[in-house]
Image 1 (cartoon, protein in one colour):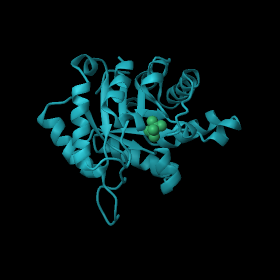
Image 2 (cartoon, rainbow, N blue to C red):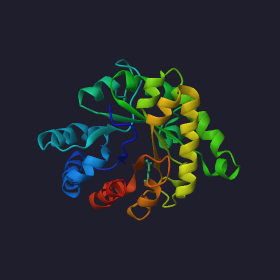
Image 3 (tube, rainbow, N blue to C red):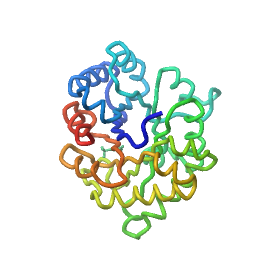
Image 4 (cartoon, rainbow, N blue to C red):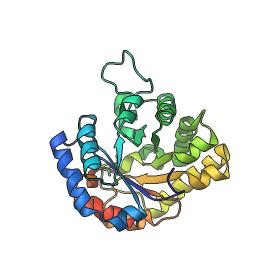
Length: 258
Ligand code: PGA
């Protein structure tokens, strides 16, 4: 169990890097990060499926304290689901975190709120930490529906979890309009939506869960804006896409959380 609210900075590598490139990046990352960084921040990387085993081997062999993450999985343990990977398969590779409900999975691959809830429960049951993403589109933001949208996504995702399970997971507030666009939410907006999510966790699962659930911000986090975003109240870390593919940039983002 992580200490309550230790910052978590996660690199979502998306559909980038062969397993060779992934090995190189995780090695560069291990040179960029120091003992002091690891002492203050939980760091994780989420390579594509094809690179998980290679990255795990490097982390293990060199004793690098970076958590291994996956980007997606199915909710069943095994079966006729061509193309899918199960939580049990990931757990066996020492995967610690699984991103669930990333907006790209929702928008491009039809993942529903119900799928997200089922997957989050299955990830938890397999002994890993679901990193559940929620976020509004630009239209929803402009229509003043941000709060309604993220709370309905989070409410659906937490359905059927015990208070303890809710307290141990990670939520990521990722406004869809900020992902990969270079346009980040202001620290004020990120903090206010993360605060709304924490309030919802309190309402659904109690004060202890609200105090311990970690809420990341994601969407165009870069070295230049990381300190402000990560320093904002109720923001417990970052889910980083593009900037996590450069070891130096990712290292600087991790250090902004120290
Ligand atoms: P970005 O992606 O940092 O490239 O905006 C974030 C994410 O999709 O998790």
